[in-house]
Length: 278
Ligand code: C2E
Ligand code: MG
Ligand code: MG
Ligand code: MG
Image (cartoon, rainbow, N blue to C red; front, top):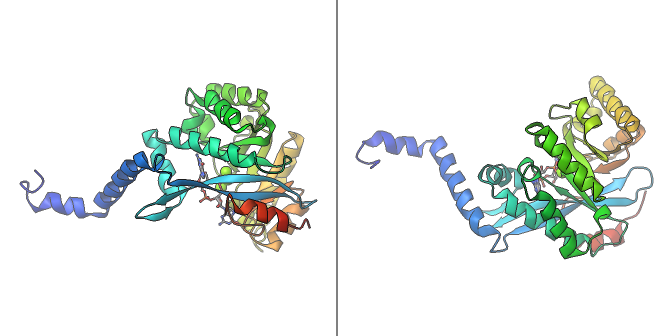
């Protein structure tokens, strides 16, 4: 039918918008098979206690090994999977796989799993988390769930009830990417968080010569977190300079390329063996 309307329709289809829609369509369609075909994998990135240098946790980060397109980073398919609802089953897989992996680690280590807004606000989420813990045998206090502020806004009352129920199970709750969203202070008071993950974009400007405002904000966040009894984690620590900066501000933990890039599950054991506390 497109041909009959003349060249115009074909040209529209060839435009970059058309290509983007085509690519999106392919991703949605390929995502449908990806789980069954075992194309997803989790990488793990360590978090380290700033003072003792002890590894405290690993964050599970989803990767998609596409048979033709190669490795697709989460930012390219998670937003689409959220729109279609496919994130529910993909997320359930990630949760259970992360718990299974973590159950093999030394028992003072926690695994942090990202929960998207769609997952948090879905009906079966508590059951899904329980299932992952039961199937893996991981004690709930070794699981941490990371949520972003965007997951809290649409239905704050329901999100709050869900997070409270998870916390009552002794699961830890972290607020991810703090500083990029609404940064509503009331959220910190009203939601049952254990941890605040300060976004990489804040850490990036901390060591700038022009970074006085960033440093003031960073200091304020740390003070606030400490007043509310929240543990703080700085994301995106990729240099010694940034490490010593956030450590001086009293940040509890760090995560970033300086310690390690996200690694495959099998590499975790070797990494732990080779890690020397600073
Ligand atoms: P996030 O939860 O904030 O995860 C941290 C991201 O920062 C990761 O990107 C990590 O590789 C990257 N990163 C860590 N250290 C550094 C550093 O020093 N420098 C720089 N430049 N980057 C660093 P990644 O793996 O591409 O994940 C992107 C986002 O995708 C995550 O952000 C998270 O929002 C989402 N995501 C990943 N896995 C899952 C999942 O299983 N479920 C859901 N719902 N979302 C996920
Ligand atoms: Mg995260
Ligand atoms: Mg984050
Ligand atoms: Mg981030």
